[in-house]
Length: 109
Image (cartoon, helix red, strand yellow):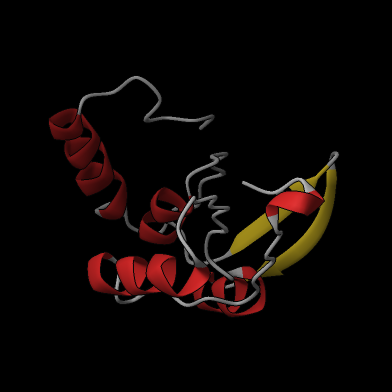
């Protein structure tokens, strides 16, 4: 199956997932860009880059090895402390991993 839920409405998507999960004694090959879809439907995953297998394992293994989350870049006219306070207030579960501060004389905002 190649990207089976692309362009599919949420109700039909859930129906397809339910049908596929109820298949017994079967195997399928599924290609997708969506980790949530792969995790829901598959016992084992393969990550391919440029047509080559680079990683194989359970969804939990893949997430523990490669699942670092998302990276967000922010610019602000406020000072760093004000920006951090805002982010922690509205997105408390996020973590700052690196901070690059540029002064206006260095071309920053």
